[in-house]
Image (cartoon, one colour):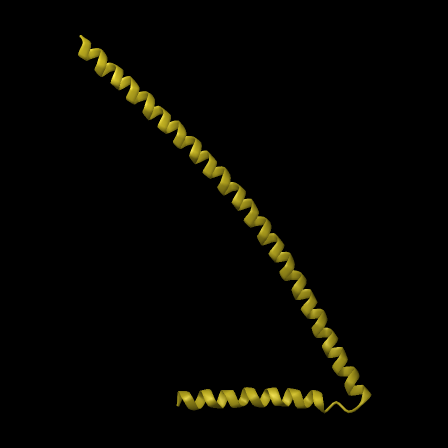
Length: 107
């Protein structure tokens, strides 16, 4: 039954596509052509408006992404600085410890 329903839907979709094509092919008068042209122009304007909105959204997303990349780089640099400072502190403490060990072994 699922296959039958799927086939029926495919037939309906194909039929609707044929009807739309036949509708456009059957334009016979100037008035019908004007109406069709008005419809197509409205669709064009609508598409252009949607494209403009999507372009704006894309630009905002790109700017946001760029900002986030800057923040990420700043954080990575900060972490690298902290790691270097931490390694330096470890080195200083190891040297101090070694000096204490050497100093106490001389006594």
